[in-house]
Figure: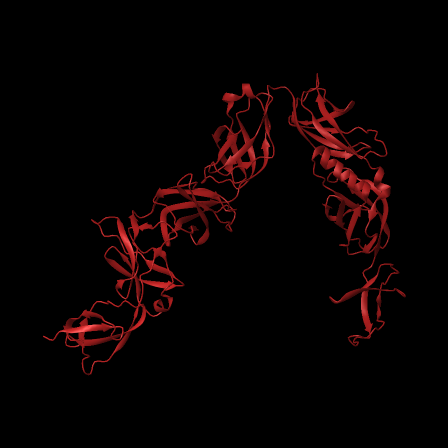
Length: 579
């Protein structure tokens, strides 16, 4: 029955009437006008301090402004982490206080780090508004001076994914459609246990997931459930994506199509009877492939357009999902049963002629066929309806010339309209070759670099005039070098072959068309037995001492470029005294 009051600020006149809760507890509103730490004491109605009552100290803080970097919405299932930003007037206080987020009338605990408040959304209460107020409280009391809004939306749900068939090589963009797939931050995807990158596609209002690369046994198919990570939670799409072996196209037969042809055979790998495969002709016509084996498929032809496509080149692709296309490097052609030329191989050869060239297309067995190289004619050899052979005729090139392209055509009763380009290259430069080393061990493996300005001019000329890839092959005597390749478009490197028990010298030959034609480089390569070391004197020296090191062993030839390699420290010139 005693009236008591709370005094704030050490008797400066800030008083509020206390409400007695029990014999040991009372509550009173804070009416202090001073911010920061202030005194608090309990007094009687006439402002006299109660005997035995201890004074206390409280922190009187200001209300803070609360903002958010993103639109505040989330699933009505709750459990989503949100971030709020508050002004930092009371950072010191926040470290020792209980802070919370108030969604409507429901408070949930929060954490604060450097003025960033994080809390988890509570579930939405049915039969209540989906748009609720959002404030921040401190120790159960109002802390924010402004009010935000949070909107509950129906839980994100996946209704469709496309495509569902993808290659284990990865890189396919799987589009995921559904309800409320609206990410506020990072998007991740998981195919089974394989987590990968995802992103929001605003044009489709959907999420896209990039498929990972997956190790796979040949012929096996893996079905992985798809999960999305949106707004801090993982969502089960309740759908699966099927990963299959990558498809490769190695050849098509036939490549020239007449009215009597109803389908083409596709040879390659990765074909499966479980995964549907579609054939695409010229980016517009489709058919479904019939799987014969894991290496062969049959594609029915869209003969409805055959008449209008006679003589034209058609692109051809395979796909399992109409998103990723495996394009054939070999085009198709429709024909009215007349002979037709599609391509030749090789596409380059030396100017002295004699290159055996495979010509592909559609040919008649009884036709007297000839090949024309520019204005020179050679005989054609019939091998099959799709394959003949011609021998290139020699062509005169000025010594200063490097490359020349001519049209190759085939004639029966008349020359075909189609032709292919064949590039002649001069071999006059063979005497001007620069070779990095002309000797190596009999066990082989010595790296040899072939270069020179004239070779560079030829390589550049072939690339510029026809954009044809050069496939070099180097031969030492009768043995082929390994790993022959063009280096930096101006030289050719290879590894010398081995030579059993023979320390003689052999001539070096070079081919630029895959080994079809070789021409001599007028250089010799000298083989010697690999040197061996038996003793080194001395074995130890002072760090700054300059000492002559004597090396004893076998098979030391008087090579002018012999060197000693001292670990990773340095390489110094060596003088060969004897073998």
